[in-house]
Length: 299
Image 1 (tube, rainbow, N blue to C red):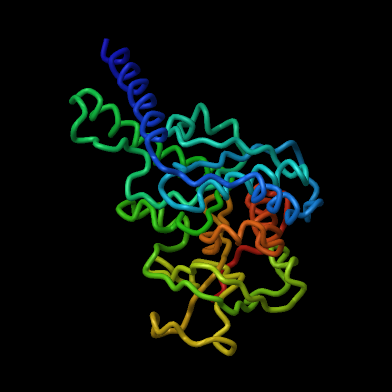
Image 2: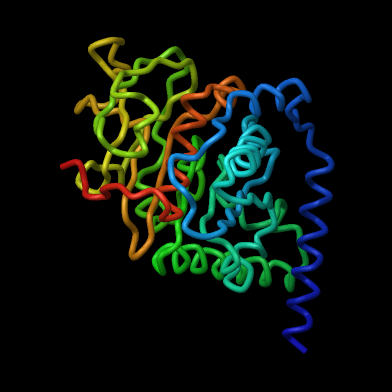
């Protein structure tokens, strides 16, 4: 009887989530913007998939302005290059083991929320639904960790590190938490020019206008292989870290799996920047295990 009650409560939570989405004023990409993303996306992937790949792109579209743009970019990158098939979802049930097992990698799409797997207004729900929601939250978290530890991949862009800041193991897995930001044109250098995920830069630095996160613990080069960082020889120090270490993207191992994260991806225009799209494409192929590359820490 209790199992039936929990199942009904979870069904009610799913309906509540869909209703909340309909009430949000979400700016979706225009048809012209989707055309720009498609035109900017590369036609070929840097590696041939070793098998047909499926990527779950997860996040509520209303939590951060770039979320719908990331959804479109991930669909286009996968379909245009044949690197993967993207499934877009904001249902926490898709992150439970029986569903997540269908995928080869998980993309955390700008999730941004402190507790993205719990329904809004949790305290106003009936007690049975609150208990079901908390039980599911714990199960989802363990499912994600087990998924990556077991050999699958996880990638994140931009606000993926602003979320779940009360779940320490998520921060350790992803490599750091949001600790502030700057919004401007930034100069970027290649910390690891020879890494395959950096091949799109052709060994040269880069500039882009976007919102860049500045990280706090558990961020450390002792645990990450930093791929890109701010080039303070070509721009002013933001003055936010005494060590002047402002990473832009990195990779790392987690158990038997792999992690890729890039702080870029706030501005809509970033999603039709060809270099950004190539970097993300390579990063996702890296966590899928189709693109080989070192994961040892930078320091």
